[in-house]
Image 1 (tube, rainbow, N blue to C red):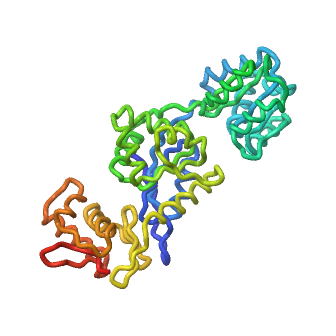
Image 2: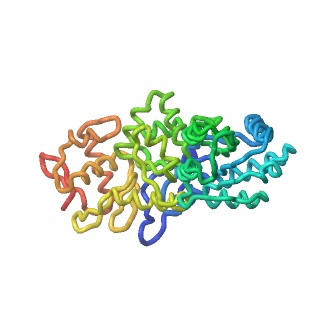
Image 3: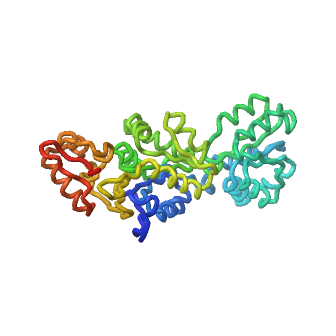
Length: 375
């Protein structure tokens, strides 16, 4: 079963994500992100979309490292701190003299974490971009700032994302490019949770899905393809379910599929959690109903600051009524929103349960016509 994390309801003002369900597709640091979201009130669903091939077992990384060691390297691009550090540590464990071999190269860092890993490994970082983006690193190299590239050996440390455009642009200059795939990401051994997540997203059973890597985003789309539900998944993301990516690189597979995504200004887990907090509640307006404040969230209503979790039937009725405050909706109209359909009696039962749960006279009956929110 897909893991679900919740936290006790807070007293006083409702937590900003109370009433919302957020999915986490990350494999690494998933618990850290989950706790950040749960502390803000979210119901967190874990569905790792990828797994990392252990370095010690990665024959492809050994082969790539040996290719780097065949002859002197002129330039090295470190894209991530954990990836570059892992590469140096793995080479040391395999008794391969990688650090000594790279001492004569110009080592470029994509960002501060990569820069720290370079220095921590006993090497010197030569340059890094202000934007922390691979695009700016590529622009720097193509500008000639590091000298002509033709005939030079350039090692590019990858971290899950193969960066095909980056690699091919360098090869087009005549450089010998040596991709080093550190921490390769593949489908998880147990794909059941991510398959369930596809179905849950299609059914709008979550309010947001977070992505911390491009491979995780691509993996979710791949699984949807295999299930024959790719178009339904895209439709869900464009019609209600919020996709939140940690940065533009992570969002690239979503962009290619036509899925819009929210992104924080800084590519950090804390910033990602804050982006979810900023984006979800703003989509649900605060209504003044019968002298009470009402906000309809994912699986709950907030009435005068009190979070009221609702069953699917009452939730569907309330959502339909809140979409048209003050308008009278007939029983046949409300039936359309009930999962599995139903009849007028099912609507009456849902309304009865809704009124009991809300504890405030927010839903009124209009004789022979239907129901409406009391405005």
